[in-house]
Length: 420
Image (cartoon, rainbow, N blue to C red; front, side):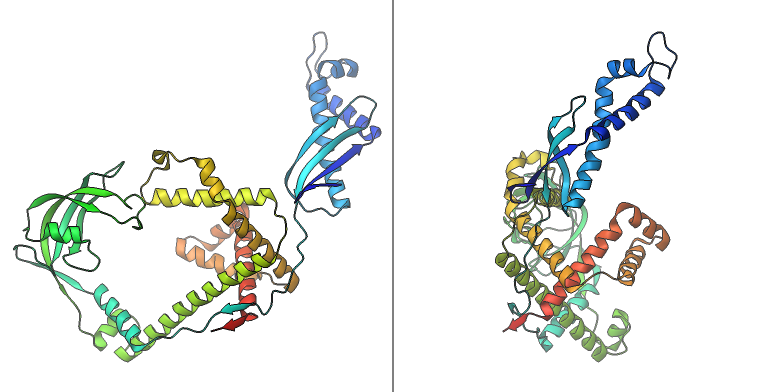
């Protein structure tokens, strides 16, 4: 076996004449059974004529039968973990001679693990103050607010305007349209352009105006655009907040008093902040692991990850109502722009798998079952049907791999040296 570059290898294989002749005879027999030649009944044409008239087909059958079998035998003999489908080149196939060919392929590299326990990572458990709890309860109170229609009058700051909105310029494709949306004039979540142009209007009034969206706006379709809207005021509402008392707590959930609600909110905030802080620490751990390990990565893995990243970008665009074809992007450049990140993600995945192997970390059957049950509940499908589908399409394996990765990350975090 010869090392070409990185994970690329080549292997020259020679198949004995005896094996080639035996397989050739089998191929001739297969063709002979269905061959139709003038003057002969089906299946009765002599082998010499079959060989003469169907030489290309026979040759193809022999190669398709012998090459994969002997190549796999060679891979097993040399204990090679081959990635993807090998390229077969330099085929020499002549009567009375061994069948010789060269296979070019990629292999999973041997990763020599450096120290992965005790890595320094900034982390400390988060704090939750009384102000944090009060703010969250205020947000819940806002969610429980009632909006009461009031008699028509000119809109003023603090009012909640019920508006029908439709874009008439500045955005490609289908117009942005909402038959009924509620905007708080002067509110922190309302663009100033909406407040300025709606202020003073009364229900039934219609007005066109422009709104400029920031470059980092959440919707790709609107980010950085100046959009002209036609707005029709349909009504005015006043927001009424519920009183913060035990009855409010009981309405929110399974709580008897406001103190119970505050305690539950504190615990939920702590759990979420702890999860986020630990996730940030784990991401740093992965970055440090990748930085300290230098090894070749199969191009097949990198290309697959680039494809995944590009497809995710397309899904995000579609979710924002953007047709990628309308952007006239150079997709070769888009794919190339994802290469460095894809390479690091593949290296991280390979390192985590290697550490999991070293530490005997694996997904247990009950852990996979619990995840499948959770998905079945979310999709409101019978558990047996979901289980059967996941077994067929490979989802079970992906779930197990995800669980293994999470357990390995937890292991690394537990054994890291946390610094303030």
